[in-house]
Each structure stands twice: as structure tokens, then as C-alpha cells.
Length: 479
Ligand SMILES: NC(=O)c1ccc[n+]([C@@H]2O[C@H](COP(=O)([O-])OP(=O)(O)OC[C@H]3O[C@@H](n4cnc5c(N)ncnc54)[C@H](O)[C@@H]3O)[C@@H](O)[C@H]2O)c1
Ligand SMILES: O=C[C@H](O)CS(=O)(=O)O
Image 1 (tube, rainbow, N blue to C red):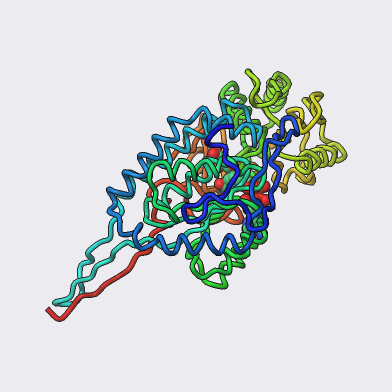
Image 2 (image 1 turned 135 degrees about the vertical axis):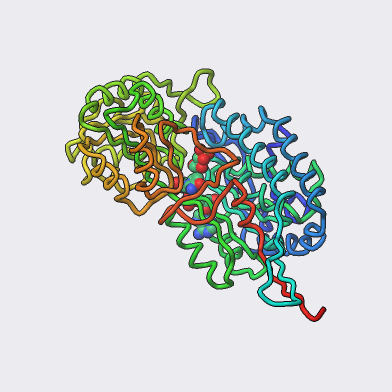
């Protein structure tokens, strides 16, 4: 077994099991086989991890920005050096095609590198004083112990967007990866230890989300919670954070519209729709959830999309040529089936897929549904699977109104050749991330984050670092 595939938790620099020896099975969603076991840690182990982070904070925060940047550069290099093994572990536990896992791992290294650079530019300011003989200054300081809770769909890169800025800012971290995909997070602990992060600075816990989460939210030593996951759980954690007024970053659910206007480049729009819909088997927060196509090109677009969906290779992620892997678990597969049946019951016309894939197991056939209507569940619910409902619209105003008719506000996409319309979409679409004639729009340089019930805070950009720093103001007089 790989040295990176470790079946233990990291607490205060020690690799340990759960206090009661309890474990949780981790399964390969492509086969259902048990890959291994990880500790089923609970509140007591979490309390110790938080205490270790709290004890490590003063010395770690006292490191210079160049010392912390050097550790992060070393971590980024170590991720790259182990990228193939990290990608294999990721595909084994999450199911996505190996090519996508490799891309996620390289993106993780890029985010760590980005924050190694950004921390050397984080600065306060001297403010021009309205009073004589006083100096007004702000300074930046690490928020303190950070708890990071991450989802199963991107178990490495979602961690990079949290560990990168936290460690750059001088904050020790207690990490709880998703129960379904713990190994990618544990591997981060192995690499962090290997490059020299001091004991207690990086702690990794696996086990009961309720028990671990409960201790995180109640423990006053945790000064910030950074969460990526569903809006439902995000709301629960927001309520919990109020008890000790913790800073929060919330990267939550999405319901992305994908709008195609008559003047779009049709080939480019179909290519974009395939990526935006079927990447990670549709299990990404920024996947297109609703495809809106203007009446003039509706028939041509929907038939082209269905043809491409039918041609996708559905296979276990470790198989050469796999383009779509399995759903993460049986409840996810069942929900996809329910949503498709609801759409069909309400008049949807299946042009591709429409049922679990012939491979069986957790695989679902890439699906395109024409004649979609607002009454369908897929319109308001995050599908989180390989299903593209395609709606027809007549006018730009109608498209923008339908696109915004959701509690979510994470990502939106539109294809048009009209520059004036592009600016109207930039102003009119209520989303944190907008792609115009592009769907691969995420990179460490940009502030990733949603509006409305898709969350708050940013990950990436300079904003992503500032979320882990506190600004203090000092007024100096009497001289
Ligand atoms: N906005 C983003 O950047 C982004 C990125 C990826 C995924 N997501 C969202 O995440 C969801 C899919 O991921 P998921 O199924 O892992 O989400 P989830 O909310 O079920 O779980 C997310 C994490 O929270 C933990 N958790 C669950 N209940 C908890 C509790 N009571 N206290 C503490 N932790 C708890 C889980 O174990 C997991 O680690 C989708 O809604 C997707 O849109 C958002
Ligand atoms: O699932 C959400 C991720 O943020 C997708 S991406 O890595 O930003 O493309």
C-alpha cells in the first residue's frame, strides 16, 4: 500500500487511531470494493486536535512570511512530485476519471504555490491623519486556529483552497475531509509533515461529521470555520458559528444556468456544454444545472448535445479512456433517477440516457432531456449528476429572469457573439462566477465564491488570503 494512503489521523504531530479503535470503511464507488478503513474519530479526538493547533499557533504565526512561503513552496513541489500517486488515490476513493484526478491534484499544487506568493504581499497601511501629531496605521494578523471541512467531489483541491491561505497567513488547521473520500486529505497530512510543517500546525481527522463538527463549532479556540459542501449543512454550521462568533467562509451549493443565444458559435457552445455538464459526472458545484437555448437554434443544439452525450465513455476512473465515472454512492444514484423520472412525468423528452448505465453499480448514463419546464424538480434542485435539462426561451430578458430565478448564485455561463449583450449579462446575472463563451474559468488568480445561498467568502485571488487575516487599527499620538 502506498505510503501516502495512510489509515490514521494526524493529531499534534502523532499518527493515531480513534480512541475507541473504531473505524469506517472506505469504498471504491466504481466497484463497491472496500479500499480500507480510517479512524472513526469523535469529539474527544477533535478537542485534542484543536488544542494541539492552539498550542502550535504562537510559534507558527511568529515565522516570517518568507519562512511560511518556503514551507508552502515545498508542499506544492511535493504534491507535484507525488501527483500520479495522489491522483490514483483520488480516483480510487472518489471515482472520477484519472485524467480529471490528475488535473485536480495539479490545481491543488497551483493554489498552494499561489498563496506562497500572495502572503509576501499582504500588508497593512498608513492612513493620512485628519489630526495633527497622530499616526494612523493598520496591520494584518492571522485569525488563529482554523477548522476546514471539505466535500467528497474534489477532496484535494477544495483542501488546497483552504490549507493554502490558512498556512500562508500563519493559521494552524484542523481538517475534516468528507467521510467518503478521506484518503486525499490524509495524504495532505503526510506531505505537510514531510516538508517540515511543525507538529500541531496541520491536523487531519476522519469520522463522525456530527461529533467532529459539534466540537469544532462549540470550541472557542477555533476562530474560523471554512466549509465547502451543501447549502443545507452550511446553514447548520452558520448557526453553530454564532455561539462563539467565529469567522466563516462558506462555499455552498449551486444551480448554474447555461444560456445559449441564437448568435452563439454553436460548436463552441456544445463543446462548453459537454464540459460544464459532464465533468466529474456532473458532480461539481459549478456544473451547468439548467441549459437555456434560444428558440432559433434550439433543435440544432439539443440534438448535437444528445449525440455527444451518447458518445461519452462511461467506465471506472482507472480505466484508460474513461470519460465519466460513477456516482459517489447509492443515494446519489437514486436521487438522479428520481429527478429524471420527475422530468419525464412532467413532459420532458429523453434524447440521451435517462436511466442507470448498462454497466450497473453506481454508473448513470449521460442524459439529455428536451422540452424541460420550470415545474420540473431539476429546475430548482442541484442535480449533482450527468443530467442536462434543456429549456427553450425567446428573449434575452426572459433568459436572464429564468437564470436568476433560484436561491443559488455560484456560477453562470452564456454563449453569445454580441458584446453589448455580454455586458448586460455581466451586470444582470446574479452569480459570483460568470463564463461568457468559456466554461473552464477557475484558476488560483480569481476570487472563487458564490452569492445568495451559494455562500460567502472567496477562495483564490488576494481575497482568498484576506479571509484568513484580521485587520487591526492603531492610532499613535503624544509625540
Ligand atoms: N461552492 C463550492 O466551492 C463547492 C465545491 C464543491 C462542492 N460544493 C457543494 O458540496 C455539496 C456536495 O458535497 P457533500 O455531499 O460532501 O456536501 P455535504 O454538505 O453533505 O458535506 C460536506 C462536508 O461536511 C461534512 N458534514 C456533514 N454534516 C456535518 C455537520 N453536521 N457538521 C460538520 N460537518 C458536516 C461532511 O462530512 C463533508 O465533509 C454540493 O452541494 C456541492 O454543490 C460546493
Ligand atoms: O465542485 C466545485 C469545484 O469548485 C469545481 S472547480 O474545481 O472549481 O472547477
